[in-house]
Amino acid sequence: MKMVERETTVRLQGGLFARAAAKFVQEATTFKSEIFIEKDGRTVNAKSIMGVMSLAIASGQKVVLRADGSDEETAVEQLSQLIESDQLF
Image (cartoon, rainbow, N blue to C red; front, side, top):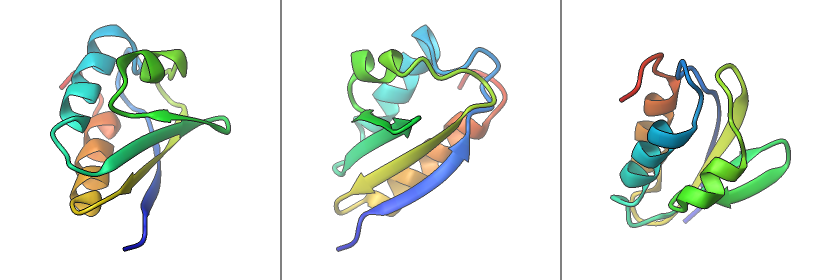
């Protein structure tokens, strides 16, 4: 299996901080695949609240989502949709 990767722009009004980051991580943990999020060359586990918050992802910034595992395509698709939304999910 090949890892799935997608570059996307964060459209959440408040960026991926605090509550939005917690919701994102909560959603990421529902997938079996290993999931990573990268910003500015720094990659963290998307299932780690501390990792995601450490990237300080603001609205309008580009990130890369990567997933590797049995549900990788679904994971990247659904997580991309969440952060491309302009409101808190």
